[in-house]
Amino acid sequence: MSPDSSKVSISRIFTDGDLMPQPETLETMRKQGKMVIGIPKEINLQETRVALVPNSVRSLVGHGHQIIVERGAGEKSNYEDNDYSEAGATIAGSRQEVFKTDVIIKIMPPTLDEIDMLHQGQILISPMQIPLITEEYIQRLRQKRVTAVALEYLKAEDGSFPIVRIMSEIAGKSAFLTAAELLSNQEHGRGALLGGISGVPPAKLVILGAGVVAEFAIRTALGLGASIRVFDDNIYKIMRLQNRIGRQLHSSALNPVYLKYQLLSADVVIGAIHSKTGRTPMIVTEEMVSRMKKGAVIIDVSIDQGGCFETSRVTSHEKPTFIKHDVIHYCVPNIASKVPRTASVAFSNILTPILLKAGSTGSIENLLFVHHGIRHGVYTYKGCLTNEYLSRRFGIKYTDLNLLMASNL
Image (cartoon, rainbow, N blue to C red; front, side, top):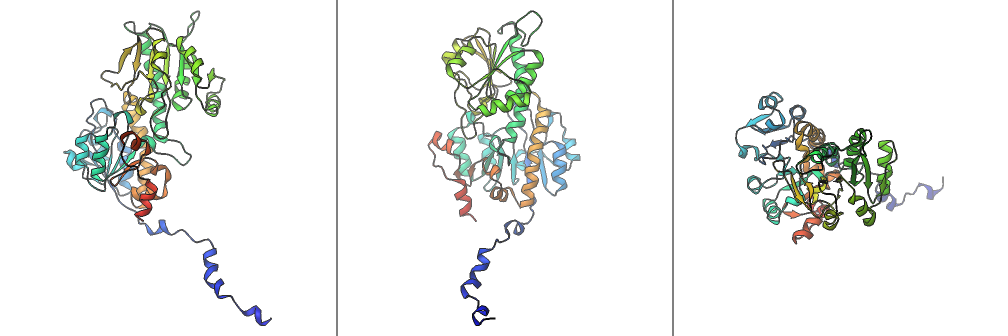
């Protein structure tokens, strides 16, 4: 051995370790946390769903979390207080008791009075519903310094929106059935069957968007023999839709000239455009609507993100329709509330794994560090507005969530 071969460079002693991959220690340092989760009763008269069903409560309680449910929260979904109590939840007689919890989960955005009951550091999980949001709503959340997570913007690891998808499955089927009912109405509709029978031409259904709503509306429509037209600017989505349906569809890109031509003879138009960040783009102008058939039906499933028809405005289950230019408009944002028990179970199936994972990481805030999809849903964080679209809309300063979380490390 040469004298030089026994020598080791001092610089290598200090750099070899840095060059080697190091184990991730962040997760092992975080202890599993137990959360106190509040489920308030929805006070909006049109909302019949509940955020967590008893079976989900049983699973969460089994993992050591405490669930406080306001008395009567599940009644409209046909779940009694006794069902929740037997699942291990605490039944609260007052809203104030529910709103003292670490995490509040709601099916509808909180009212201004409910925001006043929130406290600093609390996590609010609820839909954002862009058409209903006001500047005062955002400012109140900022003043309370809560972390608000929008359910419709939660992303799965594959980039999909699980809450939107599952509600879209319900909305797709419900939209078609609702359209069929409105179209057959002799008072305002055309008195036509949304389908086809021997010797009678089928009614024409135009669908804007080739996503999940379209898929399940088409599956229902094909069974009744309706004539279908699908529009979407994303040709890959149209191809994927045809593969899932298992047949070739009459489809087109969103060409305004051809769209206008198809609307002239449409009996039903379903708007099912989803925006990943902000408001849904306006696809159909008022002039196009004015030239549609008398008694035709518009179902704007996109209304919870602003709507894709220029003539749309938010309606409710109590008064779900209005008529403009002799066209029936149905613009209910919570269309899934027509089947509250099914919708509530669907919500719970998405939320429960998220809550369990939050518990394993220590808290929902810790989960934000490691899960980009959950982070994507945050629109206010400890007094800061983190949604760029809302910032532009209301002229409120926008702060990047990643920078805020990095500064708190």
